[in-house]
Image (cartoon, rainbow, N blue to C red; front, side, top):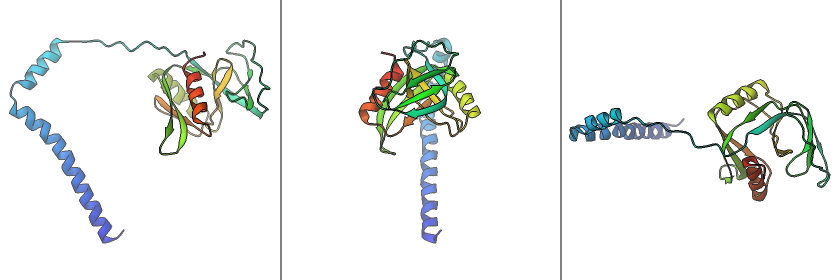
Length: 197
């Protein structure tokens, strides 16, 4: 690293430290200059207790099944599957009707709270963002940790909506699914993840 770049780095660190210090000092000075405000807020906070209930879940649970095989087919070769119990294997097509998947019994269900599709400006790829409940996020993290280098299928209405390969443990309540899909296809995938209609 050159002397000039080291100097620039030190200056940048000093600026960040000064901004952070100001962010701490300004609110403290504001509280000290307005006596009684802090105690009134504290008294009000102690006197008022509120309970918030989470919003009702409007998205049906999403089934996850392990993928045991996938085969390329021609569009139009997909017949709707007969009703299959969760503990039985299943052979179904993907949402684009370009492949048929052989799936094992249902491994778990995820409760989604939100689904959206957009063009990711960092990757320039269409992305489907899925948000889960904390309980589903923990279950998914445990599942992905135990099934690294395996493929899993998100199944909705007898169709494989997405079938990613697990490359590492996935923590967090938000997933971003991306691939070689158009904006219309990403929108259709998001719509299917939201509901079965």
